[in-house]
Length: 306
Picture 1: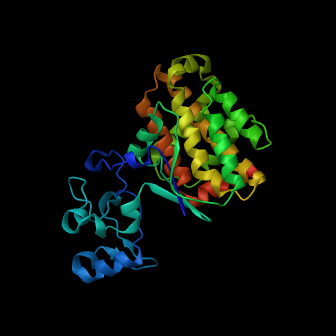
Picture 2: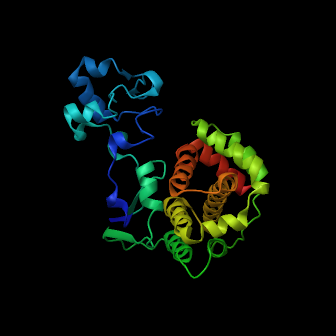
Picture 3: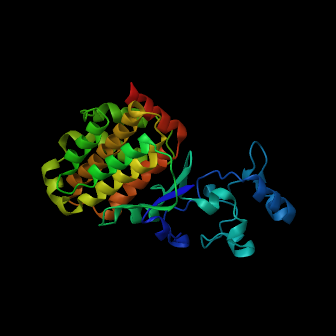
């Protein structure tokens, strides 16, 4: 069995109460059976705060806070029982795992602000590290690794690299109609008003965005876009069944970049700056709203296929 992970994977550590977008707020958290058995053995403190309507899950309190998130934004379960008694989702988030035949590929998700900082604020080309062995040849993984290599070719600009990525998938870079795509995104389920506001600003401002000045402003920050694209390809393209399917995930990466790039360009045009913090927050919002909703992601992929 082979375990694969980006070289930044083990750098992640939850920043706890310093997090501005606490994952214990606003999310309905399901509880795995083993952890639920432990919680039931403890008694009332858990019984009163867990719903068994469907899969067991925590009953969110005021402002959609987990009932065990205290006033200092720290977890009372960790404080009282130790991290080992967190449910699986809480213990692993924002880590993700793709299970493939005789290999598991792991990473950290952009929906977490600390993970987004680690991923995007990385000046070095990402390397995939491995533990264990695999004798199975997977053509999709070979294609995926080739795409990552062209995305990391810093002798070319980002648009040229995206074109090379799509060429490997036997397709070309489309002219994404942002007015149409904003309508599609706004038609999806949305959790955060900040994402709605960003999409509305994009829809009204992308035609007048000063791309020439924005590109000059971002000249020394191209690695942020490289890391975004590499993350998206690493996380999603391994799910493809064949090269035709891989093309859709490559187009998804290109679309994601386009939306995030133009949100930055519109913001820059409005106020003359676009900080790394804003970039990471834009990527975090996108990930939270699209990557972490199976329904939304499926709709986007279906539109790309059509």
